[in-house]
Image (cartoon, rainbow, N blue to C red; front, side, top):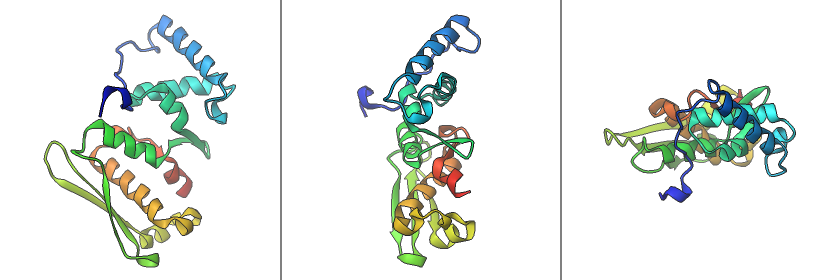
Length: 182
């Protein structure tokens, strides 16, 4: 991956929470983002929310615009898409190669396994999620489990894989579908 298309940014050592000038600069940036029609509606005209998103971007060490584009409010909780979580995990270097999936069965017997090879140990790690698990957990109330069950199980298995084997990528944040499903 080239420098030009990386998701992550370098984390600067100056914290806008302890440096007045950095805080004021961050506030101006947040205010500018909030005035843009290019950010999602839930950030438009809300510089405070943009400021928190910038704080989250700093904490996750991601580009501020990527944070604004991928953070979502669901039932009063902040989450981001599973696809973004997968992109972060693939980009951060914990895995030797991108996450891949095995798919078995169909319909009620569908099982999707997310797998990756840990860079440090070369161990293959896997997490399998089945439609049976999705039903037991109540996730299938989300209609996407009927219209695109394989994709939903891909997302869920990958986020579990990330949480288990490289939790530093998400820092405890949930994927939007996890918030919706619970």
